[in-house]
Image (tube, rainbow, N blue to C red; front, side, top):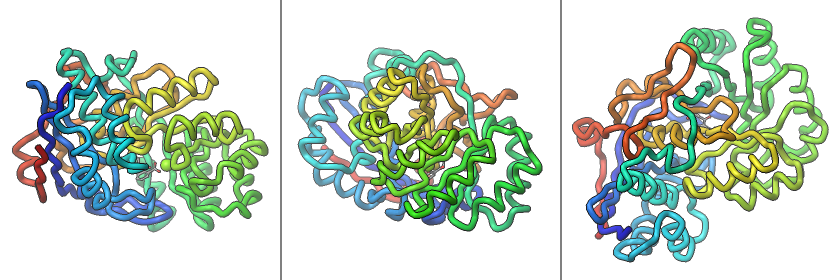
Length: 369
Ligand code: OSB
Ligand code: MG
């Protein structure tokens, strides 16, 4: 397709409750959306970069800048044969900045699916009509507050609870949660908060019967993750470390993890996500789709990706209402009684944009031709 126009749009959305991870707290989100048009079709993508460079070096500001100054100009106007060629152009124009690239790449997939009048899920190779949802709970003020939140999410039907931990806020929390819920599917996510000297402490997590331990060490600590995994029965799941299919293959060959969390924004889009998914399938490593507190647009992309066959664990694709009083898509994403989220079947991402609401919360608009 030939991309004729790109609109970068920043919207403001307030989370229903603050979300705290080991490296920072998010209350209000400013979200960068990418709308593109070409040859009579449109596509939309969402950039997952946050306000602060605490999860990755990318931020809303770096993404907006690199999209406007480098990535947009690299793909505008040229005849490009699908998302892979769009990615090749962007990679030639800029190193890294995968979250920014993903926003364009995913919009191209949406446009391509709409052009063919098929769902994004089916174009990606998805096979599931609905995907299991877990919920990721931010660090809470107190153990009591956490237990209350867990009760609410279990009652809503979530199939797995993920707790954010950090050194000093780990065992006490897990003792309390396991005392109340000995058997629920439970995971922890440290967002790289532990030092490699804390191997012993982390080995102590084995006794909680966790489904997995997500990203204990820093992003570039591949060897330390391999050393910890070799000591543990509990699977290590890498998130921040896996920034590309190459990093994925490296992790698999070093046995640095037994599960991978795929976030299309983190790895540069759907093409890289499918490549990681397939490499893991070939190695019999289960994957699942992570989340970055997306609006309904990013969620629609994630849910489509989560419908692929090797997505074998509950995903961080929670219902819209877990994050927002009002979502930007219609219909909003809901949980059914079994803790499943339906995969949209309409063309492209398969949900409509709530244009009235988007206009009302628009903070900034940059048009590229
Ligand atoms: O590490 O998975 C993470 C949110 C922001 C940044 C990093 C992470 C998260 C989550 C939220 O855990 C998952 C969700 O979108 O529900
Ligand atoms: Mg994580």
